[in-house]
Length: 169
Figure 1 (cartoon, rainbow, N blue to C red):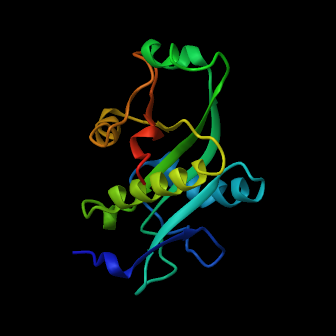
Figure 2: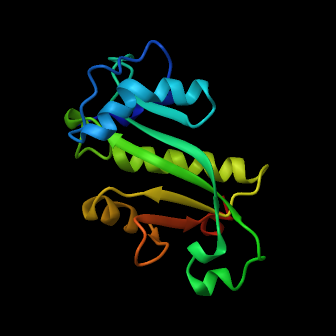
């Protein structure tokens, strides 16, 4: 059992051991090991990692956030009709992964909640209409759908969650 009081979510830094991370999906493992720091340095995305106080350099999971614009035709028709006729600002949760050793303990939910919280906070200063996620398979799609995300379209692998769902926060 993981003690959530001992977990910390922070910006990735040089102290974090990225080389040992293994979530079981090669593209997600390779991103953290080879690309994440470069994307942060180039201001392409922000990478957040979860660590345990007992092993502060071990990455138990991570997610990435970046900005995105959605064209109206990408949104469901009923929503697009209610919006102005120009691109809509969004936050992209491009990747979310949990190491094999931490899977099944709620770390993914914790990371998703943190990403949403950060996005809602930013949306109070800079307009963000929705959070968008890229899903890699149906299991991942189901994970996000249980938290209110829905498909942008039948053909899209992207899901979205309008931030107005969190206006009370």
